[in-house]
Image (tube, rainbow, N blue to C red):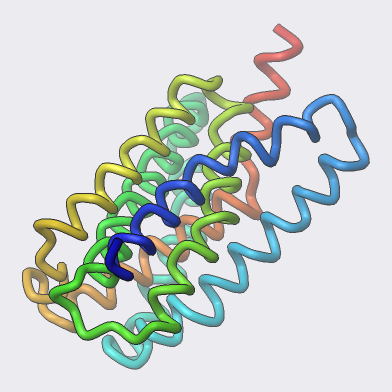
Length: 209
């Protein structure tokens, strides 16, 4: 088996690992708190140390404005749409998940044998996919249940495979600057979902119901 395909398979296994790693924590509040902290720190580190610096490099200072729009825009929208907060929450979650699917497509492209990607970067893809998979399950399970959460992971797996075999880097479609701004907007939205935690609020309301 060639090396790029090995990393692709490892990435797909990493995507499936989130539910398996979180399942033992569900009935154990202390373990759940530990994994909650791991997910939050891992995703924040991925965005703040990898995604946003790269967006700044390609998109310039305006990337900060797009990241801020993703981070604070949903809160502003929820205040404007008083009485429709649930719809705003779901819209924010959907946008964040769509962003992660695009990120998975980019991961597939990076793993492709057609790309001159370093061995270290190929290894980084499955490694950072583990906390991403956990984050998707951790975010969607309280709000929507296992089927939507599983569907999101399947969509990310399909996007990774599509990127590996057929993907064209999105930067070629949007332009380097436009792709950087989109990445910054998505990064801000994901930070809002992780730290604003509207999914947990809705999950608690649903449990009480």
